[in-house]
Length: 223
Image 1 (cartoon, one colour):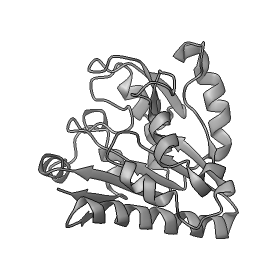
Image 2 (cartoon, one colour):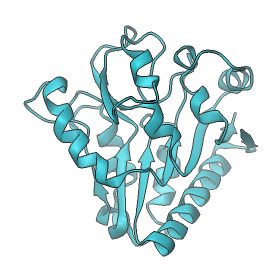
Image 3 (cartoon, helix red, strand yellow):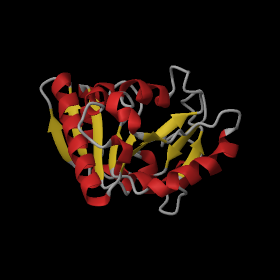
C-alpha cells in the first residue's frame, strides 16, 4: 500500500484526478481504449469534477460503477446519478457508461444482462474505490449474505448482495474483478478512516473486504 496524504481536500481531489487522468491517457495510447471503474458517494465527486475536464479521448473510455443500489438513476441514492452529474459531463459525456440497474427487473433477473454488457470491458484499467469504516469496498460488506462467495477467486464478475446494514439490494463487482484492476486508487477522508486502514493487518478477506486491494493500492487521504 502506498499512502498519500494531502494538506486539504482541494489538493486531495486534484491529486486523485491527476493520477486517474494520466493512467487513462497512457492506456488509450497503448491499447486504444480504457475502462474506468468508480465508486459512488460524495467523497470522489470533487475529483470527478476535475477529471471530466481532462484532455482525454473520452470516446475510447468505458465507465463502470464499483457497485449500484437497485434504484433508478433519478433516486438521490443512485451512484449512476452522481457519476452522470459530476463525471459524465462536457467532453467526458462521450464516454460509455454501463449501468448496473435494469428498470422493471429484479436484481436476480437483471444480473445476466449486466454481466454480458460488462465482460468485454474487463480487466479494469483504473479503479477508484472507496472504503467504509467497516472495511467494506464496493458493496462487499462484511455483514452481507454471500460475502464469502463474492470474495472467492472463482466468483462471477458481478453479484447481487443484500447487506443487513443497507435498505436495498445492490449489484456489485466481486473481489477478483476489483483486485485485477491494472491501477488501484482508494479515496478516503477523516482521521477515523485513516486509523482504520492503517490498522487493517491480515484478517480473513470477508471480514475486511478492502484488504484485497490494499497490497497494490494508492490510498489517497485528506482530513
